Image (tube, rainbow, N blue to C red; front, top):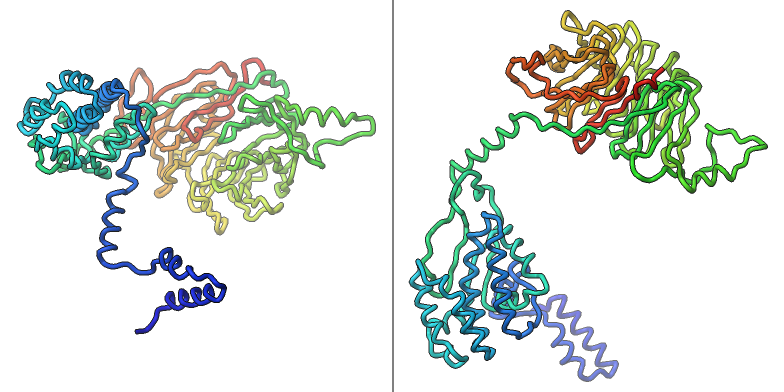
Length: 592
């Protein structure tokens, strides 16, 4: 017979060991290295492994034989089931019967006769109704006074020697497991491992019944002679599916839940606040001012500390400067960091998605990249010939786009100091710019009262939004819906317009503001649009389709709520990833 490779290896190892005078190595090696199994051995091993699966086993250790613990732990189990969610109660209730029987027999077998009689008297009445099998077993259990009596009662003996099988849903099992693994339930754990077999069933969608009044359980109880139990298993069917779909539909089509509003107010802005921004993680709040500075505040409770750096282009050290003061400030931290580098008013600010860098644009025709670890200027982007009004970063953070008084918008890569694309076509200043969610398009708003959609791939415009339904003044802000199907624009004419990108038609015209609108933003699910501006009021609009065209108290039907603020104007508005609405503005009396 041909020898397999493993047998050759074994033979070579044994010969080597014999040469080295290891006389008993043959027997030991064969015991430790069993390379084959008979069919019967494989069957027994498979059965053992299936009976000791991790998902159906509990962990327990030795228990204190104090008889009072039996009563305490059984009562605790009853309280747990009574307090359980209604969906789990009917499944867990079937545990009380086998646990009662085995706890009583355990007390009897351990010689606690008085405690066993008291335990039986207190709880046996709960199992004498609606089930003849249970009734006969309980009656026979009453005659068990010592360990020897257990062998004279056939039904009790069969119950003790047969594992009681029960099926639980995964959620009910996890709920029970968290309770049993506490330190004071060791007796229950031992009985579960010894006398019960738990079959954990994965949760299925069809098992959900949102509107049924049944107490539902999907449990099955089996033993050697299964007791008669009413069949209250909820079968998945068309009614459940229809109810679930109707619930989902009503949630989607219902009125959106209003978000909380967080307002950052800038005080003492005598230098003239032009723009503001808040990072997505709310760690930083920044503002751009007329005196060419960019100020960064901490959005958290801790101060800002600059990492070690060797070069700061915004700071020139003279011979008489005391450099220790700067080192001390960086080590202790400051409430606000001043970043200087621009030579003109700062008009645009935008955080990169990773929240570690900040882009700013200025009247000096440049865009600068600031490192928020060291609070220093890393890169200067030059290309525009006139003031740069606005900037926006791509959703992935690899590119950004700027717009300028030179009537163009330009696409940049962070690792290139020259523009990759120039989008030219507007007849006047390009005042705002926005990236499409898929990064393939950008939108620009201009003083020529038009909105244009451009292709990033070839630099050509693919849509122009204007006409009799278009804006009547300069456009200050743009926002794409999260699904990329709609574009909202707002500006000097106190109106928000929503456009369909596919057809180029205007879908909505939202009028309620009494002054220019400086910022708009979509919620993360696209059901709401927030707007704010010179009238110091934050307004939230319903963006769901097919809203009934019915005004309430003279307000448009799309207006969900208005939030008046104590500011002279609001410069920034955005929905955070948690759908918290964040706004920033100048305190009254502080603007110039």
